[in-house]
Every structure is written in C-alpha cells, then in structure tokens.
Image (cartoon, rainbow, N blue to C red; front, side):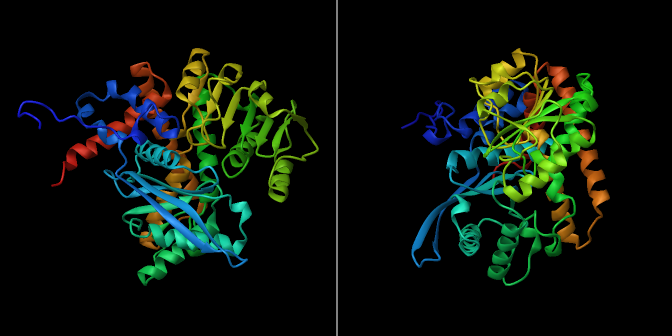
Length: 432
C-alpha cells in the first residue's frame, strides 16, 4: 500500500525497455538524447515512450492448394495528439512488434517534423510475399484489413505503402474497408492508384524528398552536387528515384546494393539503364555494365554521399568506421544505430536523419488525404512544388535548431518534433 506522501512505483514492461535489443530500443535511446532540450514539456516525456495502442491480429487465409495458413499481423498507433495516425504497412518475413512500434514512433516524429497534422502509426504482416500467389496475397491483404478495421479510418488511422506493398495492395485495403463500411471511402489509405483517388507524384515523393533535403544539406557543407559521387543501398521507389534525381543533377552514382548483390562503377553507373534492368529483373544483380563487388565492401566505397534506402540497422558500430562519405542521407527508416551515429559524428560525417530525409512520402500522402476529402485534385507540378517548399522549410528550421543547440541533425529533428507533439498533449490535457 502506498502512503499519501509517496509516489507509486511504475514497472515498465520489458518490451518497452531501452536495453532490449531491437528497433524500439533504438528509438528509446533517441528519445533519451532529446529530453534535456524539452524544457517544461519534459513533464510529458513518458508519452513518447509508450504507444497509444498496439493491435496484434491473426490473419488466416486459404491457400491455393486448399490448406489454411496463419500469419501474424500488427497495427500500432504510437501517438495521435496532433491528428489521426499515419504510417505504412509492410509485408516482410522479419516483421516484429518491436519493429512496428519503432516505425510508428518514427512516424510520429516525422509527421511533426514537417508539421503535417498527423500522428504516428505503422502496420505489418510477418510474411515473405514472394511465396504467395497473387490471389493469396489479395486474400491475406483483405483479411488483415478486416482485422485491423476496428482501429483504422480516414479520421482515425490512415495506412499507406511500405516495404513490399504498393498501389494494388492499397486498392484492396481501400475496397475491403469500404465494403465493410457500406460506402466507398477513398481516404482510408494513401498511396492508391490515381484512378481510385490517389495523388499524382506520390510514387516518387519519398525519393524526391531525399533528393531535396540532400541538396539543401550539401549546400551547407560546401558539397557540389554536380561533382558528387553517390552510393545507394536499395534501388526501389526510394533509392531508385533519389538516384535518378541526383544523376540528373550531374552526380555520379558509383555503387548500388540491394538484396541481390552489390555493383560498382567508378565513372558512374548508367542510371536509366540500371532502373530498366531492376524493373525487369527485380534486382541490380546481373547488370553487365558494372563491376560486382562483395556486399561488405559497399561500406568502404569512395563516395561523397551515402544513401541507405533499404531496411533498419544497416549502419552499425561494425561498419560505420569504414564509411568515407561526407554526407549520409537516410532514405530508409532507422538505418543507423545510436552507436554508429556517434562514430559518424566523430568522423565529421553529416547524417541527415530518416525522420526528415524520407518525409516526402508522408507529405504527399497528406496532400492525397486532403484531395480525397475535397474531391479536388492537383497537378503533379503543384504537388512537387508544394513538397519541395515544405521539405526546404522543415530542413531550414531543423538546421537552425542544430546550430543553436550544437547538436546533431537527428537530435535537432527530435527537438522540433517532440516539442510539437508534447505541446499538443499538454494543450489537450488528460481525459477523464
């Protein structure tokens, strides 16, 4: 029994503890670094450390051979103080609750950093989608959507594409939700086909955002993009688009790595040809106009800009010391561990963190959501212009916070975002 003058002791569940390995632990370490800069809002810091809602669902489907398979699915809403949850859905064999929790939290930070009126959410199914037929993939997507339908909606939580999901997956999710609701509701997801209320410019938005803030950061450190050498991990919708835009600006893409292997060309890869190759083969492997190098050698490539645009925890204490780039632009979510962050900082390498660098996708998702509500759609030029303006303004504010507080860009982004989130929490108060 607690005395009137004492404070109850709260036990933090093991899955919320920072010393537990995994993406969630990395996020909690990042929060630890920002708390000293929160001022009076630090009173609410525990808000950042606990997801608002986490749903684990069973996703049973009948396979083409008549047997029944069960998959585990997740939807986590980290924070909704500033608006409905927003974040992608990934289909991957390594999806875990820790990963989805961390990704939802990073979405909270990302949305607040660019000041769009969303909270953070994320979803996923632990499955290798390449093992499923198209029909099985559709049945799994629809069953998952029905299972999480109790917590999603255009004013509650809006899913979007992520790893191994695309416009077609979003179309199935939108249709399933609409059928269950009894009316067409295009605003329940973003990243849809344009013919179903999707937005022009959405497919390239994340990669375009990576390029936009990358150019801004390069200017601050005196790096000429037209002469820069770029190495990219992941060459899909993020890395491929960013690579194309950097190449169009005169940069040389000297190395690319994906799940199929690593290729290198000191004089610069033929990016249009490589994009065509990846579109037809699904990997950079087999691209003849390049040298094949060992995957581990990717981190030692002589380059000015390194863009990790694949999965989490790719830059670690093991390989960070070998990186030779002047600028790291995080196209992926959580690709750098805190230990690696410190190593890169000590080496004088500027890290442009994921929570601002890859925020272009959710920014255009916001545009899509707004367009769906109004049933009035903008041109692609309008979309791109609005995206560039928001990304530049967000970067400028974060850069200034970093200079004023003498902190890294990651900590500066967390300062900006966490203050916005916790200020909203404070203004709303607690109910009941």
